[in-house]
Length: 434
Ligand code: IMP
Image 1 (cartoon, rainbow, N blue to C red):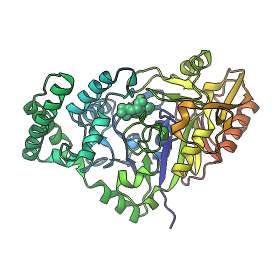
Image 2: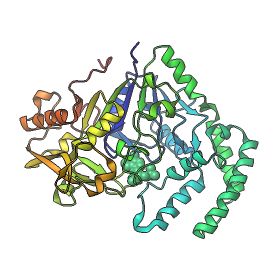
Image 3: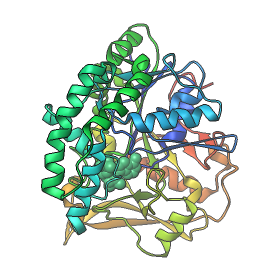
Image 4: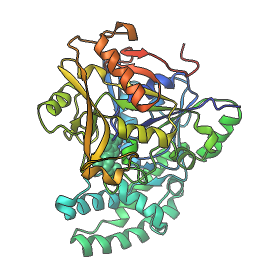
């Protein structure tokens, strides 16, 4: 039986507008599950002009009856989660054991992770990765190291947690003082803080893999919400300028504890242009007036860090690669309205190194590659009020059609503004949207 599930993944460097599409699809889902990343993600959803910015809590939270899951592949930061839950509560959105489930196998972001993240970046100087300083890399490093990791399940046992935190804090303090000459952390205070957080989250911590597999057997729909973007994937991205988890659709089975067949229909999210935060290669970057135009019109400032994002043209060569890795079935094209007002728009169709045009994409050569561009006509019209494909100006329709051709996937949705209703349903094959 074909899977009823949907997976949404970013095909660029993150910030493709996943919050909006996940929110739109969430109303057809029984579960919304995150499987990668942590509080480094920033998902913004606008409902009736009200802005909801989330980092850790899945985007299904604005729909009654949807159960939100933080899977085992997520770096769970209970401090951020508690703050987000409190802020949402103030705005009348309630999260508790009935609609938020946290995997007992998710690794916990601890204070030493955040500290190490910042200190290591400082130490690297101009070679820094440009992380979000949320402790993500060090948390996953401890996951792989095992002996210094804390899992969400540990938060439910105060005695075990105290013993673990104190033992690990002693190891971390040796490292912090020796490597960075930093002040040691107070293990006892950290233990108390996390025991208290554990009390708050214990009713929500469970075996989410078993819960999702049961839901699949019952024919329920799960929406897997990717974090970051494919070019930041730990294996397939622009290493070492990547995040530390498997963010493509290939990360869903391990990060959520479900079989590969559960991935379902894969929606690849793209912006009509490209942005990137942090260091690393970005061949279509426009460090000029065009980049500035895209940044201002697209409000390209980080949800998590407030950093100005680097902006440039759409890279169909890179997106095609990312779409192939995740087995993307359809695209969701966001922020098309940002391109309005440009005389012409450009799309990168391939890379060249010297005289040699590359026939297959490899992120490792991006830093040395020159882009091969195609130039299309721009449009002046304000398209934020368009609700059908035919209502778009001809040049905007040509642009969408060309993206579709170059990436080799149909465009299911087109987003022309931040609000829920500023979406054109184009060629989507996702069932149940009516
Ligand atoms: P980290 O995930 O904080 O370790 O950061 C590693 C790289 O991924 C940096 O370049 C960050 O700017 C980038 N990054 C992490 N999360 C996101 C995201 O949600 N959107 C865009 N970039 C991200």
